[in-house]
Image (tube, rainbow, N blue to C red; front, top):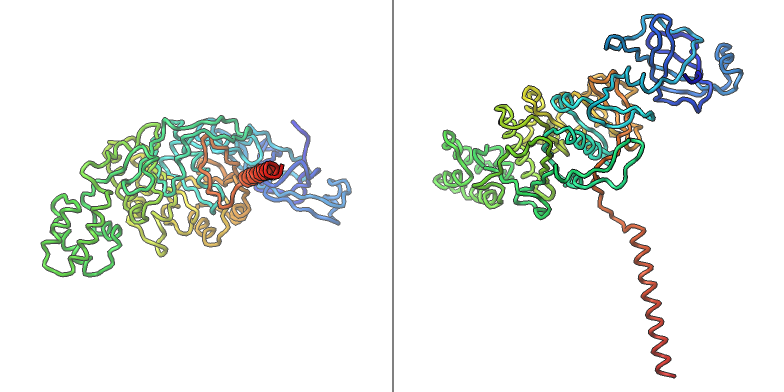
Length: 506
């Protein structure tokens, strides 16, 4: 065991204590320490804060600090010790003057309840302790990833998708911006600290796009919907129909068709039979939907969207938001019905840019909201999980966030988003909120019932390639190459001119 890093001073309870730090370089905020308790043995605590004090008057502190003019004081929150599989807080307070030591990684993992197997998210703080989460709990009880733009939410989602693919979990990824197709290829820059190797998932990823997508050339197939029994709300969303008369005629037509299965063509036939001049506006809107190609006589077999050890990515880049909304609504509704009947494998639906599909009341509306709320509240009964990803937590339905048992929160600074996290994440404290505001890139706070307390994790490197942002300015290498080429061309031109003059004048 390494030497002591400090000593307890002043009042100490079974729940927290202050200690004088011998050497400021030996310990920092976020470290885990251990202290001997005469009743309970070794107990682990978390260093919540460190402050520097000068001109200390306390004789007790002066003695511990050997008369040093500047003293560093640490505040530690007691976690406890593992006993009979449960974490127990000490039954008696700590003794002032007791030495404080850095806790060993094995002891930290044991106390926090970290499992040896599972979904490997990253390393605990600055330690080498691997943070792994139970895949069954993660999938069936839902997970949300919340962060401000550029903090690494999609990168972190990719890490979890890789882990679930490696454990043969069926996945459906709703990808509004085409960020996840790069997972087919191995990462060319892996941090060796995490103990992983580059890996591409080309054989496990299938990309589908709707027929109206401008990027069909990079897809493995088309996603064609059956278009049977579209609701009035879905049709209004698709067409952008705001004319009250046309809406009333639509409801009238659907009322006549309610006892049978119907398509867009059937609705158009019914509307044509109505004797009202307002029908032409409605027919024009319905014709636009019919011509979009989104619906077809040979729709995609949605049973193929969830396959063991595969990820189906629905790439919606360049698709009108109203169509995106309807696609998510129809696909998720059908999958939930199939899962309840046991006709598809249990798995997870990943919703990127979730604020567009399950918006909080008062911010926006979406036809997909209803089914996603239902999956959030009932999906665990049937083995269908959700991964909700958003850069605007305040704009995501708070009931859905609260249904997610595991929250992975990267840096968030917007006051409205912070309030949404405080209201939607159970057990989060003011200190944790301040921690979230200061998280560096690539770090996340994980809140989970599996863990004895929220932990800060350095998210591991991706095995697969992460989609890169579009460069607005030209890279330096490109500028240098262009400058070099121009210089070379100028040199050749000068040589050619000299040769011409030499030939002309001898």
